[in-house]
Amino acid sequence: MRISEAFKSSPLLIVYLCSGDPSPAATPELVRRVVRAGADIIELGLPHSDPIADGPTIQAAAQRAIAAGMNTDIYFQVAAEVSVPVPKVFMGYYNMVYARGLERFVQDCLLSGITGMIVPDLPPEEAAPLKAACSRHGVDLIYLVASNTPPERQRLLAEETGGFLYLVARPGVTGARNDLLPDTGELIHRMAGDVPKAVGFGISTPGQAAEVIRAGADAVIVGSVCVDLIARGRIEEMESLVAEMKRAVKEAGRERLS
Image (cartoon, rainbow, N blue to C red; front, side, top):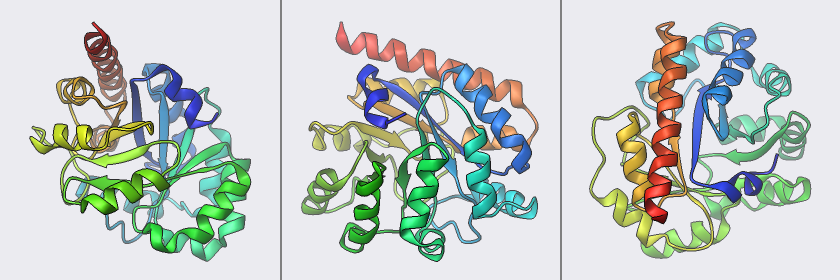
């Protein structure tokens, strides 16, 4: 499913899971549970030994997944097994993509049902070859933008992104936080335009999710809080949290329209 189709009925809830954590065999069922609970897009992380954009929670998940045998070949096998009626998006680092070969990697994304790619360490100035491969296969290459990104670069990223623009809610790495920074709302308004805006990094409660939707975001991205609950074996609690997040997102969307 293309990402643009999902955004026809925004606001959306996007959930990140680390593929292979706690094991490659467990990932498809975890994804199905998250989608049943209300996720509109699934971000499937490819574990990496040096995940520079991720905080301790997802770093630990990546280490568990690698220890459980996850690699790029198995990642695509697992992704292909995940049959869900929502878009699947790759999230990982460029050297994994480069090592496999750009054309092959994008083809494998499409063959396994992945229609979007987030590569946090790939700047747009160096992304032309990958973007060309994505364009040939109908895969969206998604860029991230932060509040401290210079204005000219923010405009460039908004113009170049595909699917949606990933707004980073706070500087630094991923990880659950208790509050939102005041400039998150300013960033959402500053990036007004046709491209959908999804806010991630630090979102961990239904209240925070509702807050960013009320501020004008088209989607909320939740990751570390779900990964942490999976690590502690609290799967039903993770499902309940996703369902609460979805209700909060929908309700905030209705409030915005009223």
